[in-house]
Length: 200
Image 1 (cartoon, rainbow, N blue to C red):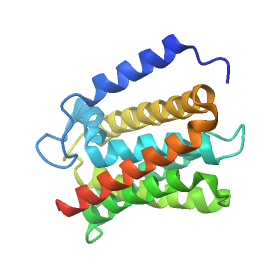
Image 2 (image 1 turned 90 degrees about the vertical axis):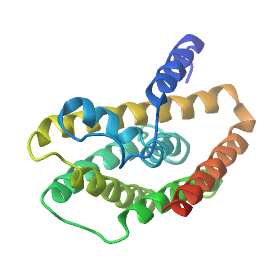
Image 3 (image 1 turned 90 degrees about the horizontal axis):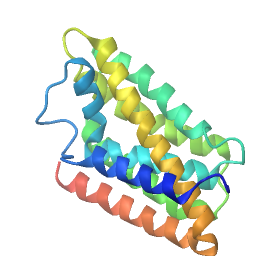
Image 4 (image 1 turned 180 degrees about the vertical axis):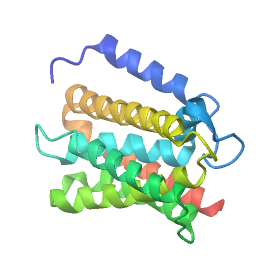
């Protein structure tokens, strides 16, 4: 873990803050055509929290050398389900389930001290990603799905990388307090998910 320089962590944090300026709910108030809208779409609070949580959880819960399994699983499920959403597949109460996925990811962070089978964790990641992907796909413009998809995949990947960097930084610089910090972040994440759910 020694390769993570403090300057790099500060730069990643600043980039994350820049990304989140003006964040609002993901599914209202902006257009959905072209790559720029695709880039902006995952910056809604529900998507952003979920994707950062996946990166942090992957560092904390997955075996060494398999950290990227979490983000990769999320991205693959996201793209497949977005294509299904663009094709017209609809799921009732989708927004509510997305908010609940944020609650679940927060709980997964809180429970990182407990051993969870990797397949279970990745299964939850894939299921949540499918919900988020359906929401992205449902808001695809009449034309330009590829550009739009490239945009939201790029932002999703960036958010996952930010989560991984944050998780590695916590493990390296907080040492024995990292578990408690993870639990605190998980509690905040779940609380935010409950709030988002209450607003729907």
